[in-house]
Amino acid sequence: MYERCLRCASFLLGRRKFTKGPYETAKGECTGMGNTHTSKIFPCSWRPMHSQKKHSIRRGKTFAHNAAYAHNAAYAHKQPCAKVNPPKRKVLAPTPCQLLAQPFLALTYSSLPHLQFTPFESSTLAKMVLLEGKKKRILFFFFFKTLTTRFNNEPLESIDKELFDILADEEKRQRETINLIAQHVRSSLCKACSLGCASPAIPCSSTTQNLTNVAVRECLGNRVSNKYSEGYPRKRYYGGNDYIDKIEELCCKRALEAFNVSEEEWGVNVQPLSGSAANVQALYALVGVKGKIMGMHLCSGGHLTHGFFDEKKKVSITSDMFESKLYKCNSEGYVDLEAVRDMAISFQPKVIICGYTSYPRDINYKRFREICDEVNAYLMADISHISSFIACNLMNNPFLYADVVTTTTHKILRGPRSALIFYNRKRNPQIEQKINSSVFPSFQGGPHNNKIAAVACQLKEVHSDFFKEYTKQVLLNSKALAQCLISNDIDLVTNGTDNHLIVLDLRKYGITGSKLQETCNAINIAINKNTIPSDVDCVSPSGARLGTPAMTTRGAKEKDMQFIADILLKAIKITVDIQQQFGKKLIDFKKGLHNNPHLDELKAEVIQWAGKLPFP
Image 1 (cartoon, rainbow, N blue to C red):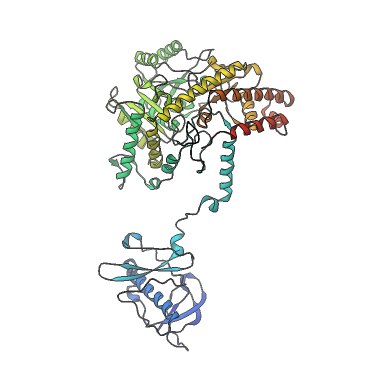
Image 2 (cartoon, helix red, strand yellow; image 1 turned 90 degrees about the vertical axis):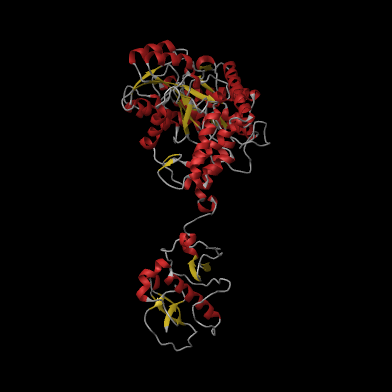
């Protein structure tokens, strides 16, 4: 007779005489599971073959025997007259017993094809599971707590209340804020407003600049993110990517359709993780290390990845990896194409970049193409901020002239945070291999499949009438806001706009964009400081950038732009007063933002107005 611990189901190796009957339990000490504990001990008539124990765990024999003993223990505890033998054929309905069985990690789900596991409410209960094999039925014993600790399906509020509260506060801030950040905000179709907004029953977890719809968020949280898929469709380094290939191919197809370009002439890489990454990858593919590139200066409206550097250091990796030259706007804020041509002839770049981050006017891609042809250079267009206008034929089309077009998907296209690289394979037959190898394996590993799925989902909407209506309204609101600001005697770079963004020139007020941004933040208006063409210092810019996409998503129309313009004028005047009272240093200026009744009054007015608008 051998003994079995009722607590951990371990065998006790020594024989012991029982004073009670063979089917009754007695208290004793057990050293199972690595610790000594006192438990009830019950007798067993047989034990697993110790000579085969080392090799039988993989085959499940010892596990099966232990499970049999566990069943007998519970059965004998309830019915003392029961026969203590392993079940040979069939066990009645699986009975949970209050045993903490030793987990057997060598047993995997792949070896249990017919497993049906139903968890119990109590995490301390073990589950008896009947497994049907080819020749016989074996009873397996699972420790429920060991299984459930691998997964956690509790809601965020239960798991991490601290983070949940922070996200809730951010959602409240977005709801009560006039968002004038010049990046597109995403919404879903609903009946709340004519332009659409996400279902109010579903909380938004995105940032202010990008409110993705429910379908896109479903893709981002999908289990497809579990899959690793280095390589490209039909050319993966890992197996099991049949459906991943379909997702990426669908995304590529929809990207080309969104911008109305043919697959015979253009190709697209949908794997870049961000716009900055896409720009670096495209430039590396076109010119290689230390190749010459030309882009617009940051103060004139260019981007860091367009080769930006200043007198002190090479700020962007693109100015260090490549040899860059920067062209600027003229004093009125427009691109001087003749100056660009002169610089290109002198510098002889391999790539000229057009497309900007804070340039409120349209771009003459045809003239850029002519300059590139003159110096035998590639033309690369970064359309991240204006891509939906191009897709809806509301601005000039770079696909008619460019060799490479890059764009983010989370700004004006209103998708997840990702990017696309388009390349003209007809004009440059070898460019596809260069772009693809630059993205992977040169700069990235496995793509984020959930993002690619979300991009594909969003690109489907680009052809919808809703998207076109929305994009047109963004442009109408932008022009209306610009006119209202001019009526309030506020200077604008280029004195207007052709797209969704407006750049304020604050020089005549003697304040910086940094100070106005702090003032607006205090009254629940989101803007961002921005350089203007006359700036030489990008740290303390003399302007601020506004955009209409967010408030358009929430249903704002042209008539609402006057209210926004009036609030901004009041904010500018308060900023001037605070600077006069507390000083020009930003650290001193911020002291005037606290306990300011004028700011409190404006904030209440903004919250009341913004609260009336639909919110995704």
